[in-house]
Image (cartoon, rainbow, N blue to C red; front, top):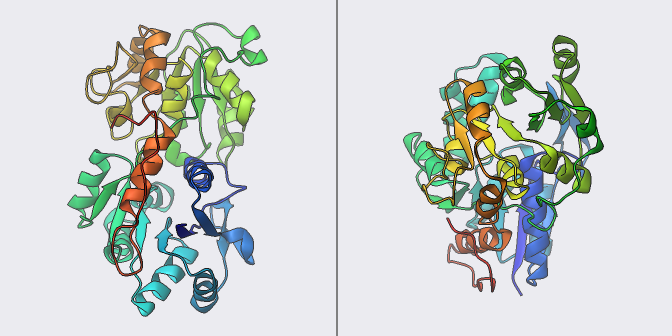
Length: 362
C-alpha cells in the first residue's frame, strides 16, 4: 500500500480551485487504497493572511512538521503550496536528503503585483528557489509548463484538472434565481477579488442579466458599483450545479489563473465559456473556440480581446457540444498523472496502476 504525505497551506474551509483539486485527488487516491497524510493549516495555530483573511498562515516549526512526516513514514512526499507549511516541509526534506515533488497552482507573481505593486520578477526568484529543489513540479497545462520554463523552472510534469461529471450536468435543475432574470444570462463563478478581474465582466456591454457566484474581499465594493448585477454569494454542491446549468454563458475574465476549474465544470453543465486569449481560457476553450486542440465536436465558447465580444460569440455554441467536451476531463486520468509524477524518498518513480475505464484526453 502506497503511503503519501501531502503538505498544503490551502485547505478547507477555504473555497477555491486549489482546495477542490486537492480534496478531490485525495478522495480518489483513498479509493485506490493509497493512505494519505494531509498536513494543513487547521492542525496548527494560525493567523489570517494580510489582504486575504480566508487563508490562514500556520505558525509552526520545521521540526514539528518533520516529526509528523517521520511518524507517518511515507513512501512519497508532495508539497502542494509555497506557504509556511510548504517551506517547512521543503527544508526538512532537504535536510533529510528526501526527494519530493511540488505543484504550481497560483501565479503569485501576478497576484502580488496586482495587490501591492511588487515587481513580479522578485517573486519569481523566490519561486525558483522553492521549486528548484523538487524532483518534479506538477502543472495543469503544457502552456503553464512553458511559462515556468521561461522563468527557470524546467522539471515540470503534467497534472491536469477534472470535473465531477456526475454533479455538473446539463439536466441539473436551474437555480430559482433564473426565473426572474432577463436572457441571455452571463454567469461568473469564483472568488470575488481583484486578481479575478471581475469588474471587466461587470462592465462589459451585455443585453441580458449578469450573475456572480462567489465571495471575497471585493464583494461589497462591486455590489455597490454594479447594483444591476445579481450576487448570490458562495454556492456548493447541487446549488452550484444549478447555477452553471441555468446560465447561457460563463464569463471567465481572469488573466492570471493557471487553469480555471470553473470552465470545465461549466462545460460539463452545457454552458459555453467566454474569456480573454490568455492561458487558462486558451487551454480549455482554444483560440478558435473549438477546444485547445481544435477537436471539440463544435464551438464550446470564444476568446476575444474584448470580453463582451467573447461572451456574445460564445452564445453560438451548442450545449450538447459543450457537454461532450467537458466530459473529456475525467478525474481518474488526472489522478493517474499525479501518481506518475510522484517519487519515492530516494527519487525513484512510485509504483502505481492506471485507473480502469474512462481516461482524460490531454
